[in-house]
Length: 116
Image 1 (spheres, rainbow, N blue to C red):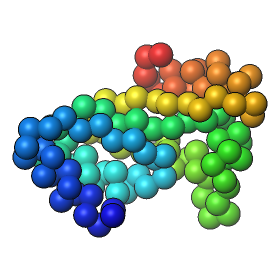
Image 2 (cartoon, rainbow, N blue to C red):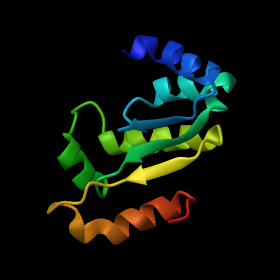
Image 3 (cartoon, rainbow, N blue to C red):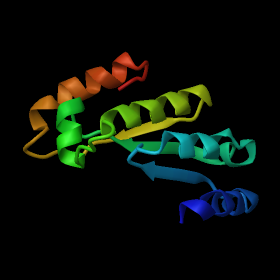
């Protein structure tokens, strides 16, 4: 599917459709390929990234990969969106592991320069 993502998004953009992308943010290089395309980027209303806690909590919930932190990858994806001036929307699934961290999640997003 990811191989055809650019083609699908271009088709949507060509039809004048508004695009919203939901992602876990773990593929910042692919995200950059998508948003670097001006035709696609002009149709993107926003990109939604899920942040489920502080680094340790997010990695625990999403599953830690021994090669990389999932949280660090989503931060790189946010940097990509910022670079291309693409609107970011953050989603958080609230549960027992992160309910006490909601203020910390909001603070971390604010520290990246986004309004909560």
